[in-house]
Each structure stands twice: as structure tokens, then as C-alpha cells.
Length: 138
Image 1 (cartoon, rainbow, N blue to C red):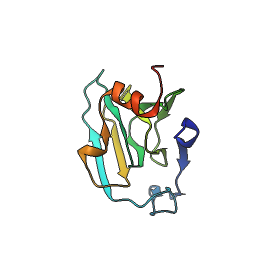
Image 2 (image 1 turned 90 degrees about the horizontal axis):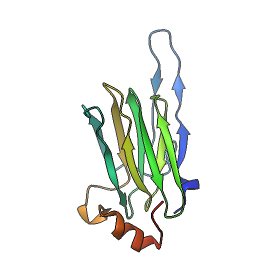
Image 3 (image 1 turned 120 degrees about the horizontal axis):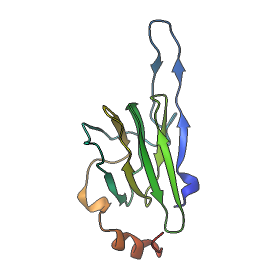
């Protein structure tokens, strides 16, 4: 996988004076079927999250509240994405190393995943990930 496959995807936004509405449908707004949903919240100031790559799972990250950054690496290049709106998100295909930082106070990250949780799908050791993709440290 390459960083070109990591992309911000705009979601439908139905504007209404009573409050906006955004929705997500499997294989329509994001390029996979949703099998798992989880969210990160109450991340302490200065803390990092992520620090892994997934072998076959796609993820789609949305800043439901507040903001945070996602740093991606594909074995050759690094790119930082700033997420701060609930009507777009970041698609992360398999085999992309990701780290998350710069969480604002009260931020909530919603994650949609193509696979149910399996510890065997994770590269948690950066050097193991680099060996698997034939990459080098940025």
C-alpha cells in the first residue's frame, strides 16, 4: 500500500437550521463494509495513540468532536493529516503505519473498521512492520 491510498473522504452533509446530519453507508461512502465501530475519547493532553499497522483491516477515522492528527507511513513516505470536522474522515488501507497525536481537549475519534478485532492482524512493533514491507525508518 502507498500513502496515495490514504485519503480524506467527504461525507454527505445535510444542512438544517435545527442541526446538521451526516451519514455513512457501507461500500458507498467508504470503500469497505463496516464490521466494527469503536471510539477514542478522554485522551490525556500530550498522549499519543495508534503506533501500529493492520495487515488486512481498513479503517476510517473521523473527528466527531475536537481535533487530532494522524501521521501515516508506508515504508517510504510520511504524511500528516489533521482531522477536525465530523463530515469527513481519513481512509487508512491495510499495511499503513499510523500514529495519532495533537489531541485537543474533549476530542472524540470514531473509527470504522472492515474487520472484527483480531490481535493477529496487528503489527505493533515498528521494526517488524518495516521488515514485512521492506521499508526503512523515515
